[in-house]
Image (cartoon, rainbow, N blue to C red):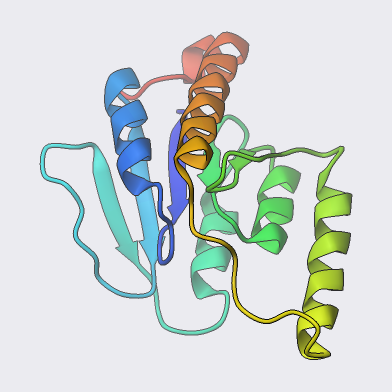
Length: 157
């Protein structure tokens, strides 16, 4: 069953996911360390996991499987989900793949070293309108690709 998992604590594109999921009749699970509001009437559920480093990531990585979509900006989580066969999209619309995840991990590690050395301060830039548009396009493309590849796996009933 095609399912969308959202690494939800800091996800800025939840509303976009709800729209796409509603259009295709897909279930969405938001995974977070604390309660958050989710829309009524949507096929969305909130999974509140315990506090702690990587608890939400561990839950998502355990549940995700081939034919699912994971929404996250967390590169180690993206790598784990790719290894399980899920498609992974960042909140800016970057599609993580087997061919680019190694570079993403290396860049993440380099940036962490630069932050530790004080060379870089601050977090990622705010999400822009074109990031949201790219995200929507990538999510729609991923849903379509999974539906073509796994026709019996594409929608909940």
